[in-house]
Length: 65
Image (cartoon, rainbow, N blue to C red; front, top):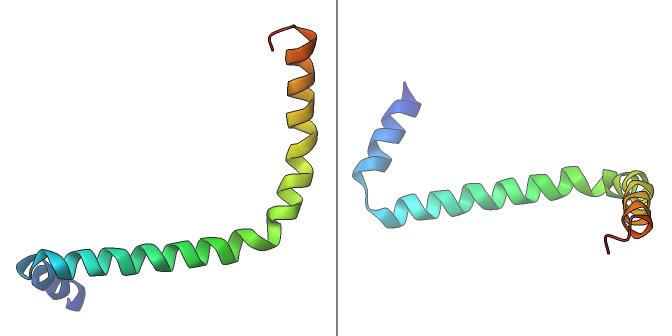
């Protein structure tokens, strides 16, 4: 029930409070995203590089670029 009261109070307060809350949540999301993706980034690059090179190779072979 406390969450509902918080949401209602947030609606009643000014736009600055809502904007501050939104920015805070975005910053938390960005930090957690970086912390989560950073350890697996080298693996993603290693897995994606051959596929990108093969696609470029087919485009060159087909004289699309």
